[in-house]
Image 1 (tube, rainbow over the protein chains, first blue to last red):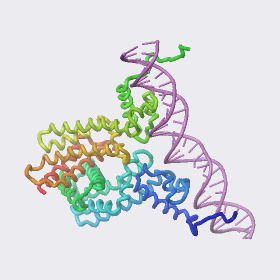
Image 2 (tube, each protein chain N blue to C red; image 1 turned 180 degrees about the vertical axis):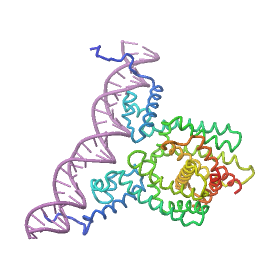
Image 3 (tube, each protein chain N blue to C red; image 1 turned 120 degrees about the vertical axis):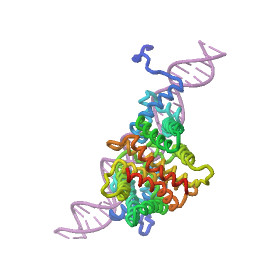
Amino acid sequence: MTSTTVPQGPPKRRRDRAAREREILEAAERIFGERGYQGTSMDDVAAQVGVSKPLIYQYYGSKDGLFLACLARLRGQLLDTVADAVMAAPDAEDALYVGFLAWFRFLDEHPQAWSVLVDEGMLSAGPAAEATDEVRAAFIELIATMVRMNLPAGRPVDDDEVQIVAQSISGATERLAIWRTRAATPPTPEKVARTLQDLLWQGLHTLKTT
Amino acid sequence: MTSTTVPQGPPKRRRDRAAREREILEAAERIFGERGYQGTSMDDVAAQVGVSKPLIYQYYGSKDGLFLACLARLRGQLLDTVADAVMAAPDAEDALYVGFLAWFRFLDEHPQAWSVLVDEGMLSAGPAAEATDEVRAAFIELIATMVRMNLPAGRPVDDDEVQIVAQSISGATERLAIWRTRAATPPTPEKVARTLQDLLWQGLHTLKTT
DNA sequence: GTGCGGAACTTACTCGCAGTAAGTTACTCG
DNA sequence: CGAGTAACTTACTGCGAGTAAGTTCCGCAC
């Protein structure tokens, strides 16, 4: 019985940990993107990779852990993209527009990434929530920095107001992104970024002189 | 054996359907508010009411159904509160401030209501998602109406821009609400409403003349 | 080579919870 | 009082997260 049928030439036997982890992560990103967090079971992911569930648990600890790993990558890319665009802008007015533009374009170009990021919201309990908040905090910090950049140097800054503005902008861009993915014919990233900039630019000056 | 010990004087035997439904709804609202959607099991709710699980299923159909029923009530109250405030305002500038103020005050006064409403986000699948979107759509419609109210009558309106603005405001207020519940010492509703109005008012005029 | 240590991987479970089938109890009206 | 029905229960199924206890394969010392 040494010759039980084992059809595959080179199936994909044992791989080293790093390679497997990458393989699992890619599959998870795809499936989470398609079916959402709730709609994805660990068995699904395991089957897709051709591996058993406990292995995934060994590498990622929990479903939240796996989801978080996906999140971390995507959010990192998004944050970098926007931050780069903002930093490259010549002045604050441009930075605002260019930052929004980078945000909406990135999400257009990575639709399934966005599905994963949107699902963040669904994790309101567990350790995932904290991590999620950290991400958002990073974004808000970026925005707050931009806002402060725009203020005259010596002026006393009302930190509460800066926070309020930064939170508002973060919320606005998130909701716009969700809306665009669902709208039948969403406006272009340029249009949205332009309108948003028009809406906010004047008000940011008001802040300045408060 | 007719006298098996049944300790309670008037426990709470059979009640008619309407009364039971109310009782269940109240318990559910409380528990969902405390532990979130995921953290609440139907058995918990049943135990709390002192009733068995299938009864809840008979009345509300599913966990989503029960949650939705909670949502519907709270959202209705919130929407009414804000709409009333807005309608009572003498002009558009005031309407903006007063609307925001009503929003943040309501959420301060009904903290557990807000927990339920925030959990909306976690339902990205199922029939709950649609209902949730309807709510938000109602809010956005209110905002859009306000924005349009503020435009010169004869002017051609760019519906895309109105939508973008309305979505932004909706997103901003939601995120601010979440932030406030988590912040150690959140600014007063007045402060937040004021800052938000300052941020947006100028820009809304820009829209006008686009 | 041969044996041994550890990393990669699996089978075969438990447990919690949403949802259900099939019945039982109590009120109400002819 | 009996028949019908609304209110309610016990006792399950099924699915999916998470785990205990192995088994197989590879590299390396001797």
